[in-house]
Length: 275
Image (tube, rainbow, N blue to C red; front, side):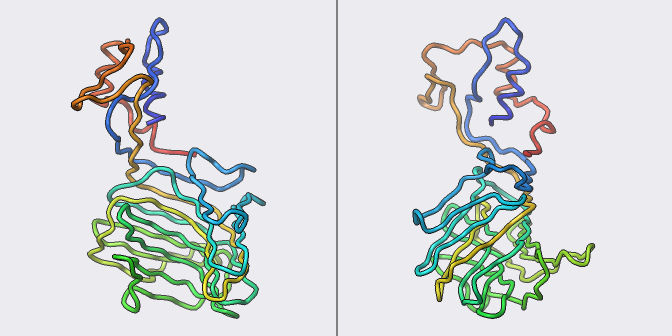
């Protein structure tokens, strides 16, 4: 929506007051989002950070990577959610650069998709003591699908490992590839068919469990392509009454702008990439 507003503002004449926001219901916007974490600050346009246990987990951007640190002793987590929910088909990937857990059982670095009604799917690098595995599973109606949904392979130590989730219709494929040697293709770890996951949010997160080790997980080169649901935005002083937009004071805008607001005749190519 913010990017739509920019396009609308551009089409206003210099004698008009810029239109502030799109007075409509939530928009569905096809977009590609990438983040290589080269900035020293988290991109707040893309991400919403969640740390449920204050002073038990930390996020830092170090050496062009995002680093999550988790304290030991109990189940703690740290999450980055994409700000906008998505609908329909999607694909998302991220490099898991490293996972340090002191060879204790229970640390994990995850790429996940969680629906509005609590269903979820993840693919993760998980510590199992002296060894690590790449694991995927599907969460439905309050439980993980063990053993039918749970699939894993031994991790060979290649850094980083790139993980991927892709949904086409109601089928979600969890895949991985080792980035060395170059040119490796993604390998499917599990294919979840007839899933009940609807609209939801992509996230990367770090969590500890079992022996509750201290964890340091690093991620890089995030990618997502999807149809994102832009939030409902209204200009200041405006509201809906019986499904009609009512503003006080009344909005002043051109016929051209009104046409764009309701017909959406703008160039979608301008808003297909967030960097």
